[in-house]
Length: 135
Image (cartoon, rainbow, N blue to C red; front, side):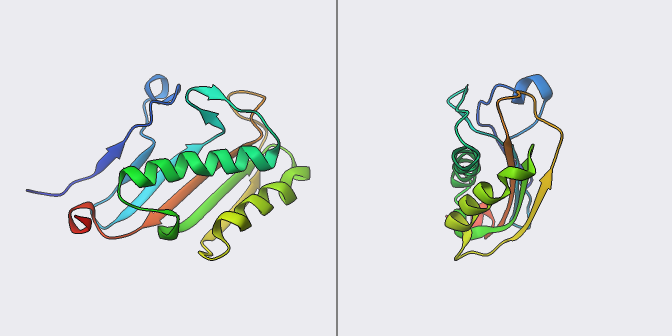
């Protein structure tokens, strides 16, 4: 059997409308997780920037789990914020989740997201054994 690209869907409200996958795993073991926000079970959980960051990363972790990977496999994160004032809160959430992993990270300020109550979006890249090698 030839191992090709695997895709994970989360059932998020915009996946079908926009045409994307929550995560894509390449044959070399690299996994890219699309932008994740604080949308839990299809409902926006618009808490503090800290809470939104934790929720968004959990959405990414759930996608990684479907591919047999975990937080320890994360090699890169990107955090998008709508306000520079939220850097400290989002940074604190990132440190709590990744202090022992230390992925490459970027934090960028953007003008906004699909829903204005969202103030944080995150992307994650992970690397681990190919799916067939994990079994």
